[in-house]
Image 1: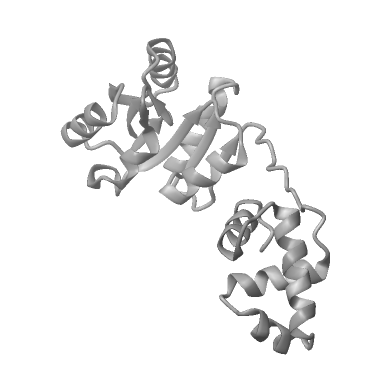
Image 2: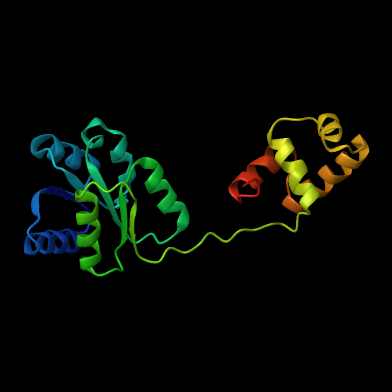
Length: 198
């Protein structure tokens, strides 16, 4: 399998390349930025890239939107151990995710997993779960908030939930207060950010 390593830290990049060579994986190039990576990928046509998310001031995941990366397997090698970044990598199209705190053997296992064209996402390292804030919303308030997200008015929500419109407005006032939201749009935005609508 032909591999390109993309990381702006010299020691990590060289360490990964050396380890790949020792495990009979062919490293055909390396890069420290998105522009370098695109040029190397155009020249070498790798099967897989090992990609750091932080490339100086650049977001490494931005590389995945370019055509050079469309048909290539992508393993993210990063220090980001949070659920949000993991989700971003998956959404961008990564096939594997390895924390830099893991031994290099973990990286090799993920590379081989992806190289075998297994469809499951490969993950190595402990990801910190997103702390969910529930803002002490009652089940009824969450139900009203979900309907608010669907664009329903207080009157429509009242009809749907068999409540009076003043009762719904009282619940909305409580929701805004608990979320520290000034209006419907901000309340929905806060709810989405904190996974209150899941």
